[in-house]
Amino acid sequence: MNFSFEGLKAADNSLKRIRIFRKRMEDDVAPAGQGTWKESIDSLKRLEVAEEAFWDAMLDDLNTPEALAAIFTLISDINAQDDRVALTREERDAVLAFLDMTNEIFAGWPKEEATIDAEVEALIEQRRAAKASKNWAEADRVRDQLKAMGILLEDRKDGTVGWRKV
Image (cartoon, rainbow, N blue to C red; front, side, top):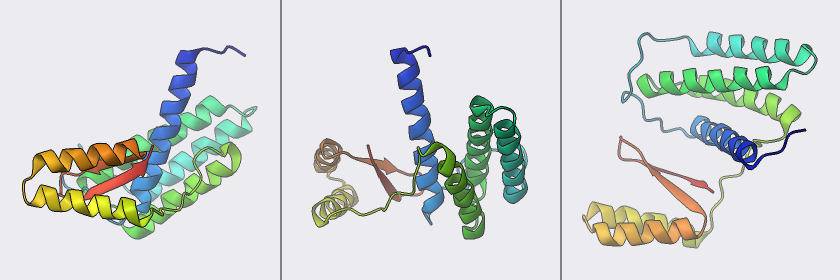
């Protein structure tokens, strides 16, 4: 085994990417229509390709780098498609089922319960109100306070706000 801090950071970034993608698939609000894509893809067929590539890699002497590559290629393709045309709840649920199945093997991106306590929820609403009244200093202050609490806000192009724990 070759350990390096660069490798550790890369692994952490990879896990974050999968977890962020999972959160996006769990959300019902998609930032559709903002991105560009040469041509539309059939998300469910693309998912089948990823699943086949994943299992082919795992059956090839547990070739985990190739199995993970199948997941990351799927993430890139589905994110691009979802940016252009929002995936349906059925498509999102199918992707989530695939992530659940792969998580049974890697145990790195489990489904997290999206619970936040009343204080955090109140702060998110307070920031929304500050932005609506164009009080940017207050909105920034609340955002920084949430960040200090481990909550990262994600302002979307469509005006909605997502969040995730960091």
